[in-house]
Image (cartoon, each protein chain N blue to C red):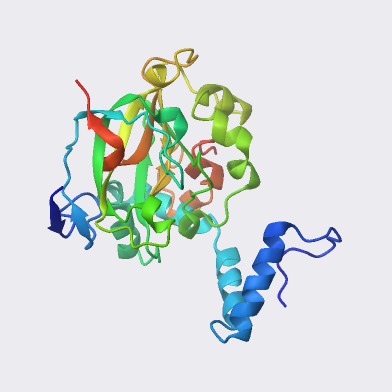
Length: 113
Length: 199
């Protein structure tokens, strides 16, 4: 894990010591299908699904660590990931071009083929 | 003791109400905060309403350069306008003839309070939070908003550090209006994305 001083860009650059951003706009990513205990900001309904990075928001203290009264550093890159509703819900009744965007921290993402 | 909406409520305190009162009294007793500071903070939250957000939308409708900045960096645009958006990373999403945006926080009740004030109760309800991500068109129809099939719906789930506001489309018939007139047709629900401005 490479740590860099300053989050280096993103829409809202922060000044925390941060993990380097691994993904860029347009990258296809899969949300980890995992169920750890604790305060998790990755909704269950999106775990295991594949989306596309809409933007890199900047790096922010890890909320899972903050919830344990730690400093959440190094900060984790945060992305907005766009998913097709039809991919998330197999029985989706809307239109094929409907989407859902969710903020997801980098440690919850892996590169999708 | 300040009024926190408990007038006429003779029910016993809930667990969290009791926790809030106990913690606050301890903090005051230990001199960490004053009752006045708590009261001022509550008043500051209550004072904020959707007028601020409506002013931002009206400015964006009237000023193309401001709109460009608002979509690029919502917080910086608000600061440039003199709107105080403390510690907020604001993402403004634009409705167009091809796209309609709607905002939710499925995990709790994240909401752009500095622009819209306190969220309405339905925004915090399990019904809205669980359904708008799964069947947005049906939920919007229940608000009286039918989105045409050729318009894409973009739902935004604010799960982390960003806050969202919808920039609605400026309706026809508002040509030549000043910003105050424009702001008057921008409701809270338009900026959440469950309504559109009407004349």
